[in-house]
Length: 635
Image (cartoon, rainbow, N blue to C red; front, side, top):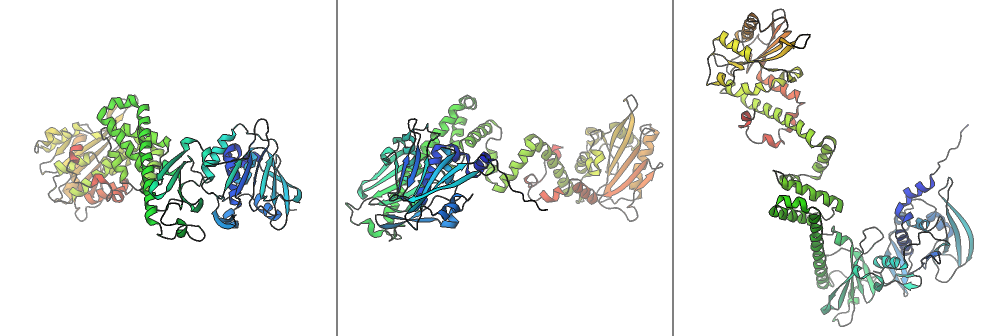
């Protein structure tokens, strides 16, 4: 038997996820959303009854188009309703007998739920388009399985000019004064004279906006006044971003940043300012109405170009002045909070810090205050560091993808671990690079050039040689020198007594790992590694392979190799191997293994042990860009 299953909802959390916490909890956000809904409904007037302690009643009514019963059900009862898809981006508004086209705010239908900010239930009354009746509904935030419960209460005759009304009998969240709501609505909806908002029968006007939120720019010779509205908002329900033109009290087009303005539109100033250009036809040689498109969606192209350029210049100068002042204020505040640290780096460096920070604020206006504080602290640390601002220079050369990768590396590894790993990789890659440059040259001096490289490259021969217990054995080298009757070559033997320079100019290195008895006392050599380097011009032949066998017998004769020595491996390295001598050779019942190997194979093994990283980074690693003349000095 098939059993029908259904979803259940955690009511409060579901609504918060769908609608957003600010709409449901913040009365200012809620009322702005509801007024925006009236705007989208083509209203020219909105009346708000704002609640108080004496009268908790709240309502908002408009004279917009309203909704039929079918439209109400489709729009009000659909979560994530796509307003732009179903109704378009514009709404036609009839004002003084003329049709205006208005761009809407709404996109996803969340704003209609803002009434829940005032109570868990409210009523909606909206007229139908087809007749003179209106429908009234009760909307309740359910505490059961269904998040919202809607009931149709009645159908009655409409009131004149009625569109949609929302009513709450006993409102909560009534602690915000009426004047604050008037100020907030004034900074958002006054740019279009065809839209009027009343709060408790008081018409909202520019006079209601707080003085510090309004500024004025006058262009007297053109009879133009520019109102600067400091909204302080950047959310979707604030259209006061950019420039809007009004000719004789009628809006031309809508707010936008179109035009040639010498400003960065990402700055905080640009994002929170709206400019209303109020032009009148009085005292003008030309009536601006003659240059407006028939539908008032804009001006005829280039018809008032000179005037628009003049206005844009004034606005650009205003914003740039404000941005400079704001940047200075921000830097001064950050400097004040860090005055103790700044005093430690000196006046000159403190000035450089301020100047750099000011430039960053100017070039990166989208930085939040939190991130700006972090940047200022980073710059202080740079100023105190030896490398100064070298890091800034390097970052400026990176792509955005590089930033993402660097962020992931630092997040996972941190600086200390990253540097530790990369330093070791850098050294090994440099070593491979140096070996590759030298082994293919016949004039390479294996004593002065190759031997120091292999002295630090034991890891090439296998992971077992990574152990720090493998060290050069001076005692063995001394025995072999006497046995081979070796003399010093250019003072090398004297300076480095831990390897042997042979009479023919070749050299041998001896690396051993000690053995220990049951009391953890050292009792000899457990493992011995011999690396014999041949000149690039000398092929590895029988005599070269037999050389380690002579060493081995002498060392065993002197007691340096004994029963505690488990194994001795000898690598005989040269540029070429004679025919028939390629295979390894064992002596003393396998206790000694002699392995001939070309330098090219050594290089291949080294690259393989670095996971082929050498070939992958060779073209991009900056530390390989220059000749490695100083590499030998490093090791």
